[in-house]
Image 1 (cartoon, rainbow, N blue to C red):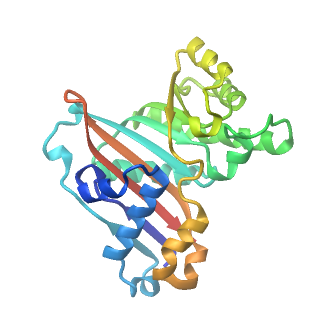
Image 2 (cartoon, helix red, strand yellow; image 1 turned 180 degrees about the vertical axis):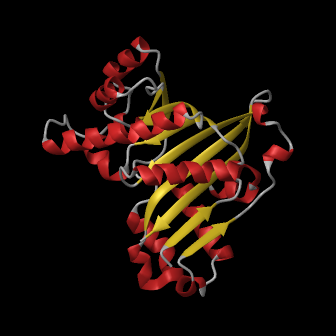
Length: 265
């Protein structure tokens, strides 16, 4: 087995899962999703007989109840690195499982490997590593811009970039600039004043969130996979993770929350 694809169930409809999650963060939430799927869906024979395995927990399709215009879909993508193909694959997976041709909002988190250089808690960034990472982030954002041009994404923003990085990326991007920025208050305690001012001056939505800096650390993933894959567990890493939320516009309720992920060697 080279690739393991994860399609979690609708957490909104799982009362037992919500009880387990009381007071816990999104990192624990994803861990519980993975553990549940591995315990209930994984066939040990597949790890030696198949190159690609998908574990899927389906639930009723909301599109059977609501028209697409009645739904607001928000997607957040977490990448390991700056690989544009991973971003493209993650979004295509989300659109496929959502059975739609577009999402209303996309948030792109700073890739895990770049967080120490570009993230909120990183330093001032004047060295070569910073310049290279910034250029890679701008290049990654260009893929989002293409999605917006093709109407796959209607609005898009970024998450947990240091203020100077966000402003540089904003100024270097094309016509489809980020219209929102997420800030994790666990990292910076308060929204940086410089970022607040820049957002206000450029009509950018500034929102807070509580996702951990790294949604699924590789050490945590190894511990989850080891009972099922043995030593092979150490060769897998999360190439991309998607979380999507589906709200019913008129009623203002969250109708669906689901995780998708690609774990690969």
